[in-house]
Length: 167
Image (tube, rainbow, N blue to C red; front, side):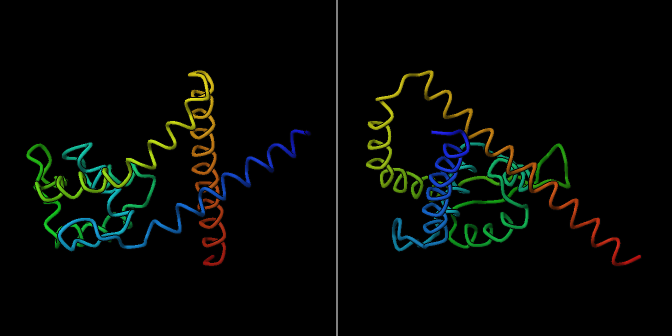
Protein backbone atom coordinates (compact mmCIF):
# COMPACT_ATOMS: atom_id res chain seq x y z
CA UNK A 1 0.00 0.00 0.00
CA UNK A 2 1.37 3.44 -0.95
CA UNK A 3 2.22 6.01 1.71
CA UNK A 4 -0.58 8.35 0.50
CA UNK A 5 -3.09 5.52 0.86
CA UNK A 6 -1.79 4.72 4.37
CA UNK A 7 -2.07 8.38 5.32
CA UNK A 8 -5.63 8.52 4.00
CA UNK A 9 -6.51 5.38 5.97
CA UNK A 10 -4.96 6.87 9.13
CA UNK A 11 -6.78 10.16 8.59
CA UNK A 12 -10.11 8.37 8.07
CA UNK A 13 -9.70 6.44 11.33
CA UNK A 14 -8.59 9.55 13.19
CA UNK A 15 -11.60 11.54 11.97
CA UNK A 16 -13.92 8.65 12.78
CA UNK A 17 -12.66 8.60 16.38
CA UNK A 18 -12.83 12.39 16.53
CA UNK A 19 -16.44 12.37 15.31
CA UNK A 20 -17.38 9.67 17.81
CA UNK A 21 -15.90 11.70 20.66
CA UNK A 22 -17.43 14.96 19.42
CA UNK A 23 -20.86 13.31 19.34
CA UNK A 24 -20.73 12.48 23.03
CA UNK A 25 -18.78 15.55 24.18
CA UNK A 26 -21.78 17.82 24.75
CA UNK A 27 -24.41 15.22 25.53
CA UNK A 28 -25.50 15.63 29.17
CA UNK A 29 -25.32 12.52 31.27
CA UNK A 30 -26.74 11.80 34.68
CA UNK A 31 -23.82 10.98 36.90
CA UNK A 32 -24.99 11.06 40.48
CA UNK A 33 -27.87 12.44 42.53
CA UNK A 34 -29.54 13.94 39.45
CA UNK A 35 -26.40 15.82 38.46
CA UNK A 36 -26.50 16.21 34.69
CA UNK A 37 -23.34 17.50 33.07
CA UNK A 38 -21.70 17.08 29.71
CA UNK A 39 -18.67 14.96 29.01
CA UNK A 40 -16.62 18.08 28.31
CA UNK A 41 -17.60 19.45 31.74
CA UNK A 42 -16.61 16.13 33.31
CA UNK A 43 -13.23 16.28 31.61
CA UNK A 44 -12.75 19.82 32.86
CA UNK A 45 -13.65 18.64 36.36
CA UNK A 46 -11.14 15.82 35.96
CA UNK A 47 -8.41 18.30 34.99
CA UNK A 48 -9.29 20.51 37.98
CA UNK A 49 -8.91 17.50 40.28
CA UNK A 50 -5.67 16.37 38.65
CA UNK A 51 -4.04 19.82 38.75
CA UNK A 52 -5.29 21.65 41.83
CA UNK A 53 -5.16 25.42 41.87
CA UNK A 54 -4.66 25.93 38.13
CA UNK A 55 -5.99 29.13 36.64
CA UNK A 56 -8.67 29.17 33.95
CA UNK A 57 -5.99 30.01 31.38
CA UNK A 58 -3.85 27.06 32.46
CA UNK A 59 -6.85 24.72 32.38
CA UNK A 60 -7.62 25.84 28.82
CA UNK A 61 -4.04 25.15 27.78
CA UNK A 62 -4.07 21.68 29.37
CA UNK A 63 -7.33 20.75 27.63
CA UNK A 64 -6.42 22.35 24.30
CA UNK A 65 -9.46 24.63 24.28
CA UNK A 66 -9.99 28.37 24.51
CA UNK A 67 -10.16 30.31 27.76
CA UNK A 68 -13.70 31.30 26.70
CA UNK A 69 -14.67 27.64 26.47
CA UNK A 70 -13.55 27.07 30.06
CA UNK A 71 -15.23 30.28 31.21
CA UNK A 72 -18.53 29.09 29.75
CA UNK A 73 -18.35 25.77 31.62
CA UNK A 74 -17.26 27.14 35.01
CA UNK A 75 -20.67 28.63 36.01
CA UNK A 76 -22.40 25.26 35.55
CA UNK A 77 -19.81 23.48 37.70
CA UNK A 78 -20.05 26.25 40.31
CA UNK A 79 -23.87 26.11 40.38
CA UNK A 80 -23.72 22.35 41.02
CA UNK A 81 -21.19 22.91 43.84
CA UNK A 82 -18.63 20.72 42.06
CA UNK A 83 -15.89 23.36 42.14
CA UNK A 84 -14.94 26.50 44.00
CA UNK A 85 -12.84 29.47 42.91
CA UNK A 86 -10.34 31.09 45.27
CA UNK A 87 -8.06 34.09 45.01
CA UNK A 88 -4.41 33.11 44.63
CA UNK A 89 -2.24 34.50 47.42
CA UNK A 90 0.83 35.07 45.29
CA UNK A 91 -1.00 36.87 42.47
CA UNK A 92 -4.22 38.76 43.19
CA UNK A 93 -5.12 38.88 39.47
CA UNK A 94 -5.29 35.10 39.15
CA UNK A 95 -7.93 32.89 40.64
CA UNK A 96 -7.48 29.17 41.23
CA UNK A 97 -10.14 26.57 40.54
CA UNK A 98 -10.53 23.78 43.12
CA UNK A 99 -12.71 20.68 43.19
CA UNK A 100 -15.18 20.20 46.04
CA UNK A 101 -15.92 16.95 47.85
CA UNK A 102 -19.13 16.63 45.81
CA UNK A 103 -17.04 17.15 42.66
CA UNK A 104 -14.71 14.35 43.75
CA UNK A 105 -17.71 12.10 44.33
CA UNK A 106 -19.08 12.88 40.86
CA UNK A 107 -15.66 12.13 39.35
CA UNK A 108 -15.53 8.78 41.15
CA UNK A 109 -18.94 7.90 39.67
CA UNK A 110 -17.81 9.06 36.23
CA UNK A 111 -14.62 7.00 36.45
CA UNK A 112 -16.61 3.88 37.27
CA UNK A 113 -18.58 4.43 34.05
CA UNK A 114 -15.31 4.43 32.11
CA UNK A 115 -13.96 1.23 33.64
CA UNK A 116 -15.51 -1.11 31.05
CA UNK A 117 -14.36 1.03 28.12
CA UNK A 118 -10.83 1.42 29.51
CA UNK A 119 -10.64 -2.29 30.28
CA UNK A 120 -11.63 -3.07 26.68
CA UNK A 121 -9.10 -0.61 25.21
CA UNK A 122 -6.37 -1.85 27.56
CA UNK A 123 -7.13 -5.42 26.52
CA UNK A 124 -6.94 -4.46 22.83
CA UNK A 125 -3.67 -2.59 23.38
CA UNK A 126 -2.10 -5.54 25.19
CA UNK A 127 -1.43 -7.05 21.76
CA UNK A 128 1.02 -4.21 21.10
CA UNK A 129 4.55 -3.90 22.46
CA UNK A 130 5.63 -1.03 24.67
CA UNK A 131 7.54 0.41 21.68
CA UNK A 132 4.41 0.25 19.51
CA UNK A 133 2.39 2.04 22.20
CA UNK A 134 5.16 4.66 22.35
CA UNK A 135 4.83 5.13 18.59
CA UNK A 136 1.07 5.63 18.95
CA UNK A 137 1.66 8.25 21.64
CA UNK A 138 4.18 10.00 19.37
CA UNK A 139 1.69 9.94 16.50
CA UNK A 140 -1.07 11.47 18.65
CA UNK A 141 1.32 14.14 19.93
CA UNK A 142 2.44 15.00 16.40
CA UNK A 143 -1.15 15.17 15.16
CA UNK A 144 -2.06 17.49 18.07
CA UNK A 145 0.96 19.70 17.36
CA UNK A 146 0.13 19.83 13.64
CA UNK A 147 -3.44 20.86 14.44
CA UNK A 148 -2.20 23.57 16.85
CA UNK A 149 0.24 24.88 14.22
CA UNK A 150 -2.47 24.85 11.56
CA UNK A 151 -4.85 26.75 13.82
CA UNK A 152 -2.17 29.34 14.58
CA UNK A 153 -1.40 29.78 10.88
CA UNK A 154 -5.11 30.07 10.13
CA UNK A 155 -5.57 32.70 12.87
CA UNK A 156 -2.61 34.68 11.54
CA UNK A 157 -4.05 34.63 8.02
CA UNK A 158 -7.45 35.72 9.35
CA UNK A 159 -5.76 38.61 11.18
CA UNK A 160 -3.88 39.62 8.01
CA UNK A 161 -7.06 39.57 5.92
CA UNK A 162 -8.96 41.37 8.66
CA UNK A 163 -6.29 44.07 8.87
CA UNK A 164 -6.12 44.53 5.09
CA UNK A 165 -9.88 45.09 4.98
CA UNK A 166 -9.61 47.88 7.55
CA UNK A 167 -6.78 49.72 5.74
